[in-house]
Image 1 (cartoon, rainbow, N blue to C red):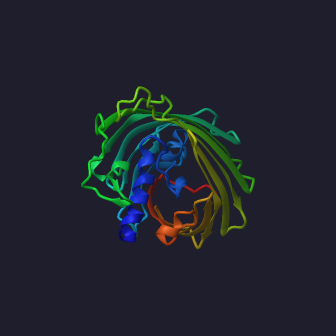
Image 2 (image 1 turned 90 degrees about the horizontal axis):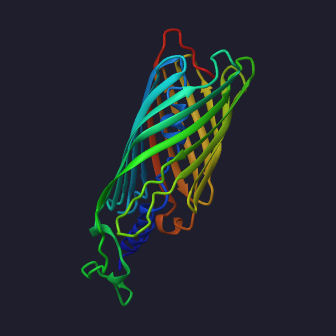
Image 3 (image 1 turned 90 degrees about the vertical axis):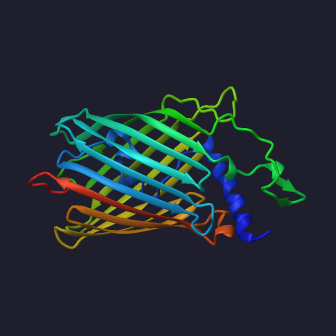
Length: 322
């Protein structure tokens, strides 16, 4: 059996655990606030609107590629309300596809003149999951140590697609005193809050587990040109968890052009390098995951490539916050 085919089988088995376990992830998790936390929807009242796309390709050296796309939009509605939403599509080796359509709203609890910002958010939408049984691998298809996809799987799924309700909630805090040279923030959110039932196999109890998520960080104004932002994200879904942390740096050449550089570490999984620019209303950012987990022996340390483009429409007289 060819090595590439062995790798594909390994990755397909890993991917199949996503059907009833953890959600997809993004390395540039802070680039789409609506996707990160419902309470961050339209949180910057100096904006007219923000729209963006994030794309991620993982394990591209294998035929078992994992591709994620997120399209997000949000805007402030008035002094206290923000609205928006996102569409995401996750494709796992063309075996499992997960499509989400979510509407989002946030409410600012504190007043604009307060030094502290506190908001809550709610998202409501739908999840569509579709499975291609022909791409799945089962124990019965191994014959004397050799995989034979012509052998019957011995398995029968009750159905191959399903629509689930999606309800997410979140809280977000940030310190916004304009005098200070630091701006800490923190957010907590719960995804799949209703724990909706999903059932492809006919099992009596099969629910999409809630995902608990906490992120925190702070921006530090080093001087008029340079700002540093250490940050971290922790996610937990049933027994699966992820911890990622690192620092981004922003260097201002002038009012229109900003250089973005950074590095992160995803625990037991990958080292992530990041680079980008902000030019007027546009932010372009790319990152690459260098795989350091046990899977690196099969992928030659090839991880995930990710690209983000964000468009920010500004209010008249807008000055970006630190």
